[in-house]
Length: 386
Image 1: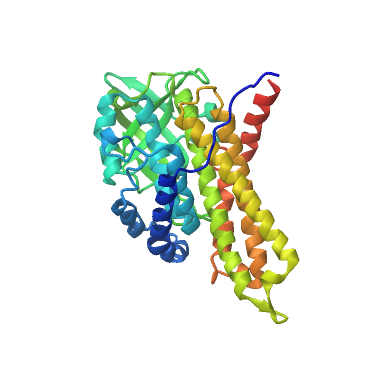
Image 2: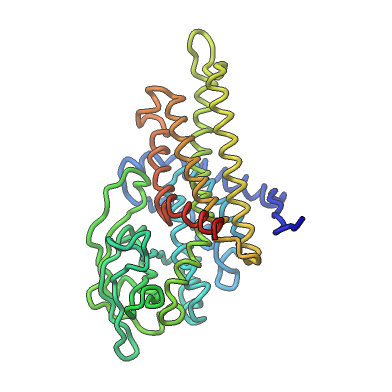
């Protein structure tokens, strides 16, 4: 019998458990009380951002040499989960900056890293990841945004959509076509908003309303070649490498949303009485709760497993599939569990007086962004059938 690979042991260390306890208390005290109002007003919560800064969470994901916390991806997943359990919009503040700066961290020059990563760590700057276009979402290689060389600069023209933090960020990691070649004709750039990034519109969304999503436009925006990320024509690989390392934490966000909904529903079931007994005494509901808890725990382990692979440097080339599995399964679980949580509360669950309807709305996007779950299944199936 041939052993293909060893699986990582993914029990948290004592230090990680203590860290989780600290983050959970912070989220309960500082983030959760603002979640409903953030959703109601559909505006970016600057108070929540300041709270993240005060806990030094803005730098947690980045290396120590740039002023960051040097946290492992497993520890970043812990933070994403706890934030999402309290407020999904706030969890996206944490996640989007890491996503946007991963190309800089892994492919940019030391000059770019040393200039911009400390600003990200301190919370002075925020960044967006500009990959998708109106006709190039899942099919990234069909993008039409162009960058044309002009001396020691590039002239950028085009439109990007579904941009998280549009109008908030002062930095945008932008992927543009630099030659006609489908995959080898894309290059990545770090673009400062002040160079002429225009926000055409902000979307009105089903959920995660406290995180702005918009369409941005580039009209003859001049970008110095010093702000090119990686080699010319290697941008597609940069984008895929980045998504492989960010998808597990989207899975963590989904786990957090599900856990937050289940926790609230359990409290409700214990307190709500019908026919003289707590709802929690109803065996049919007990089994639903057990199923929710099992799914969440399975999703959490898949997320931590994918994060551990990334932390080890993906020595066996497993991360792409493991990350796709974790993100896909966890986000499906989030929709299942939050829908059940609404059902647990009956008519009350359908009202904005209780948080589970918000959590159900927030959960849906985790099945869509950073690669739809249909795309994740294609990645998994291709690996299995190749």
